[in-house]
Image (tube, rainbow, N blue to C red):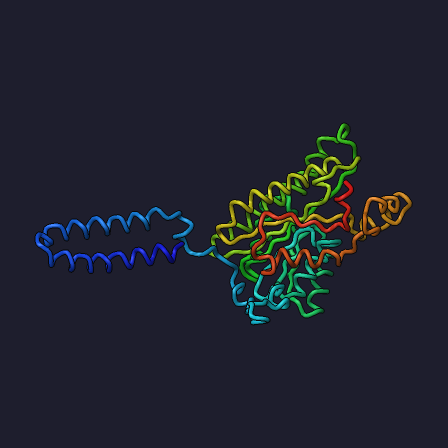
Length: 336
């Protein structure tokens, strides 16, 4: 559309001049020539100004290096992209919350293994240091940032530390979360607020912090918040958790709508039951094994089952995805 409009704006004066030359050869041509020129040029200007603002703006901002990562090659007459380039995070700076263990520690290692410099953020310093040591031993770059992400000042300070070490954060993974078991009719105010503060508020304010810094730097990026299949199907005993994750999904969509024009993608990853150190014993118990009946693939997920989904959302491979909720659950949600 922009090309068509520009052609009209450029060509109309040329056509007008030709018409004027022809008209001026006729009697009284000089009298009408000026009127024709003014009218047509005004009409052409109105066409250009009537175009939607989006067609006249510069392209959405993208993280530095995103375009350079993607080099098409010709296969069978069509442009194809190399998988190694699609998932390449070299030049990107990632910040992962809840990175002292479990999925957060895994996410940090995966992002670092694919080229990102990573800030691991959590409250347990010793565990963070161990995670950083594992990443650096594998040839990656990482720092540990001890912080309580439910404290907005501490969260901002964590971003400051990451930025001082590596530059503006372009990949944020809102992973920190907790489950407080209990019936909704009996959940205490303290447990409710604690659940919402970590699962929802920290993700919202973390996304705000990341987005504001990207916009100030004039770059885009990717924000991934860890949701859950319980955002869509409720089970007994985890009502507060399920409510917080349902809110996370809607917050993700709201952020995505606002930030898409700025080249900042916001998506959610909704895992099913994934075996970690925290839940390993329970899932191996008779009660846990009984849950397998509701999972079509008849197994619980492993931490590595989320590597691909995470990289899809965090890397240029998912560059046209925003406001999406990517489910990885072995088909469990089908039965909820």
